[in-house]
Length: 88
Image 1: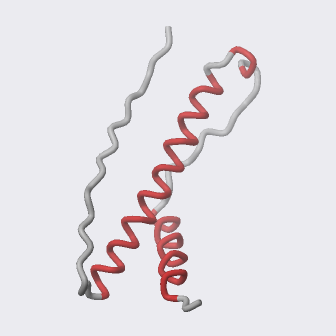
Image 2: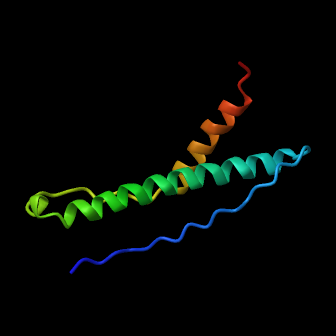
């Protein structure tokens, strides 16, 4: 018997406003970083679940993906913020 996990992903519509303040911009980038890392985690976790349930991998140890930490979210947000602020 195979158990399936159904993940509901809530997508909010974002409305662009012309005059966001610095806090709003940073909050948006933080949310983007969090969403990006969570999507990666859920994808990796689904692959992990598929792998461990496969008969070929029965005697092989596979590392379970770790949920992104707050520090990872902040680091990713800083990278995104730096990218956005870099003038090309």
